[in-house]
Image (spheres, protein in one colour):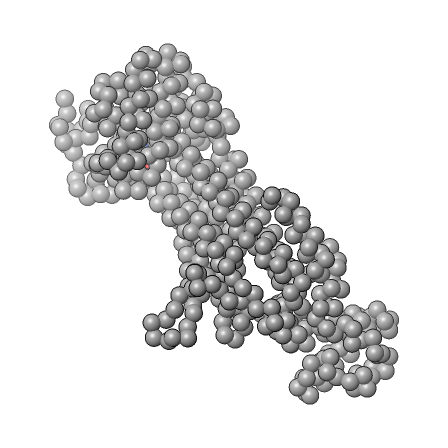
Amino acid sequence: MSDKTSNQMWGGRFAAGPDAIMEAINASIGFDKRLAAQDIAGSRAHAAMLAATGIVDSSDAEAIREGLLTVLSEIEAGDFAFSTALEDIHMNVEARLKETIGEPAGRLHTARSRNDQVATDFRLWVRDQCDAAEGGILALMKALLGQAEAGADWVMPGFTHLQTAQPVTWGHHMMAYVEMFSRDLSRMRDARKRMNESPLGAAALAGTGFPIDRQMTAEALGFDRPMANSLDAVSDRDFALEFLAAASICAMHLSRFAEELVIWSSAQFRFVTLSDRFSTGSSIMPQKKNPDAAELIRAKIGRIFGANVALLMVMKGLPLAYSKDMQEDKEQVFDAADNLMLALAAMEGMVKDMTANVANLEAAAASGFSTATDLADWLVRETGLPFRDAHHVTGALVAMAEKKGCDLSDLSLEEMQSVNGTISEGIFDVLGVHNSVASRTSYGGTAPARVREQVARWKEILG
Ligand code: ARG
């Protein structure tokens, strides 16, 4: 028998237990206890398969499966003493199973390794996160859709370079994010589909000589099929990377929108008023109402990008198959997933609650010569001027208005005609912002009619 301080799982080979520092650097139980439910589900499926294939006696397998449920309920009740000496969730659960049911517990690890075990547990966990992200994204899309429907014809400035470009509709702007988040949704679904294969039964790296049934465990755990190559099964973490990549892109969208909300809620813009529920005050400046939720979304997103890069760095130098480096996959993914879900929920709350200041939006839409393109288009349409010349004429009119300190629509017909004699009264019809947006009826354009079509389409899709 080995020294009683050495590890009960591999103590046969060891004379002494680990140094305290070794235990500290080696242990993952501090974080991988989050995989408890997945670990126990995986073990229960494995035990059932061991019985079905006759590898383990069915009464032992039944004792194992029952005992695992007891362990799970202890963990869920917060009644479980996690041990760092037992390194990780897999060995903590197995050790407790042994205490609970005795000798049959030792048969659970037949034809299995912690390598396929952890790969299975983590896939199950990340798969759940894809589903959670899907729920969060859908809820946010519905909130955006509500805003778009309410403001399909509210006019606001559209920007390029954050300089006033052309008037757009509020609904159009909201629907732009619906489109972006819909792609995030489909990326999450794609990632989920690809990761839904079972590593269980790959054992340490080479498979096993026991007559296991990998199809059976795959099915029991809701996987589409077993992974076809045991080396691949235990040694890739691309499924977690795909989740992080999809999460990063979604986070980038969240951050851009958060940035817009910070700008829009400022005293200089006043495009939106955020609700008290999603704002904070200042301890010294009584007038302040700060968009903290938007700022924190913008900031937290960095952690998600960081996790993606960190895991790529962990993986990039590893020869096949498993290396302990891979234990560093979990904390990054846990943190990224937690922050993604929080950011999605906070954004949904802000969007649902925020009030667009319609009059301010419209006033801003009309400033900055935002209908100059409409004027140039009118010249092309009505006078047959080539667009390049029309652009030039319009530029001269903008310069004239700027000099006078007025809007384009404040110039008189005579003043306009002094720049180009063919201009007639009809030009004033296109200088208003409502006319401007209403005219942009091309597919995907900002016209309220087009926006309403898109809102209706998405309402149907989202139900
Ligand atoms: N805690 C380990 C991890 O998270 C479990 C796998 C350990 N495998 C091994 N061969 N040491 O990766």
